[in-house]
Amino acid sequence: MPTHEFSVDMTCEGCSNEVSQVLNKVGEVEFDIDLFNKKVCINSEHSMDLLLETVGKTGKAVPFFDPKYGNKRKASVGETKWERRRGLEADPLPIEGRLVNSCIQARRKCQADPVCSAAYHHLNSCTSSISTPSPTQELLVPEDCREAAKHLRNSSLMSCTCHRRMKNQVACLDIYWTAHLARSLGDYELDVSPYEDTVTRKPWKMNLSKLNMLKPDSDLCLKFAMLCTLNDKCDRLRKAYGEACSGSRCQRHTCLHQLRAFFEKASEPHAQGLLLCPCAPADQGCGQRRRNTIAPSCALPSGAPNCLELESLCVADPLCRSRLVDFQTHCHPLDILGTCATEQSRCLRAYMGLIGTAMTPNFVSNVNISVALSCTCRGSGNRQEECEQLEESFSHNSCLMEAIAAKMRFHSQLFSQDWADSTFSVMERQNKNPALMPQPWVPSLFSCTLTLILLLSLW
Image 1 (spheres, rainbow, N blue to C red):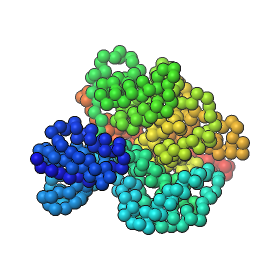
Image 2: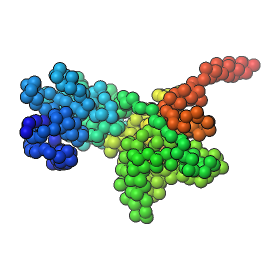
Image 3: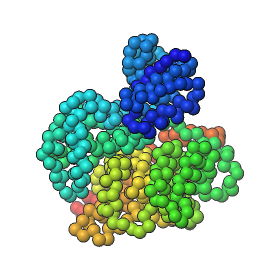
């Protein structure tokens, strides 16, 4: 049988077990795994393309030695035969998105340079001993850590990013925040979102005719729940967090993990439909269903902790810290006029990314769309103002409220019109929806109002 030798990026027994599992499922293969040298030798009649795709399902980088062409190089799932024959290097980034500079790859480049590698490892030990300060505190860093940071200033780690759906997301974020210390030393730098979302999402097609089994007057939250049930992946992920978050003895950590998995892996339109379904103000049953989407009885703290304590808990976790910074980056009003930093879709994605973390927000009541953290500012002492700013970044955030309201209007319109074809692309309808597009009369109206105010003040 032909022999193929792969060099797989395995770092532990768990990694080698993953490789064994995917190869055993293929069948008709004999293989030997050398964890120490990170090699997998496979004897099989299967094509090299199939074996490459199989090993690639583990999410590991899979450079391999191709005796036919006498070269060793990296390959990834989806690489074409033409690319392989030309000896081109396919992008080994996760299939969910192709990042310009993944932090995991940036660290590999750094490890190839002895000076950069030593500086990174020293800085990594520094991050464990340096606590992250609040915005009002100064970062105190030992001189040896500052020296290590200087050696990383010109490395690709300074501009690396992660993706919220990548398999090794936590490892990527650990690298990002280690490198972040090098970026922020010398000049005070606010935290910047580590996420680079370059995914071009496919339009989500809905078949509304399947909703005929519901009563015509059913609320929209119930209809979106049905759409999720009719989708295998959405239904499976929803049941997983439903089971983890139910019962009188629920484990909050497990509940949050499954809840986060749902909002990361379910298609964005399905997840947004469940969480941001519009309800009539008088329909408290619908509003209650919307609030219960995140299973608040288990996912949220039983008491009301101090918001600053909640923030400290979040910042200590690279994943939660990243989601919070992403939210602050994309949902923060830039000025007193409420100009938003980025488009509404990014703000909503960042907001939903917090669900399943220590900073999980939720709707305040069944009758409106106000959201808030489950915490209080009582007992904040001389940090009262700082705490209130954190609290109000959710409860009084005009950019977030406008994004939620616009998405709910769009969801209402999905069911308020008679579509000629019951199956249609949500993305196309949303992009063409005039209700969600900037209105040309808004600037002129603001200009007229400002002029009138000035004239009255001079009267």
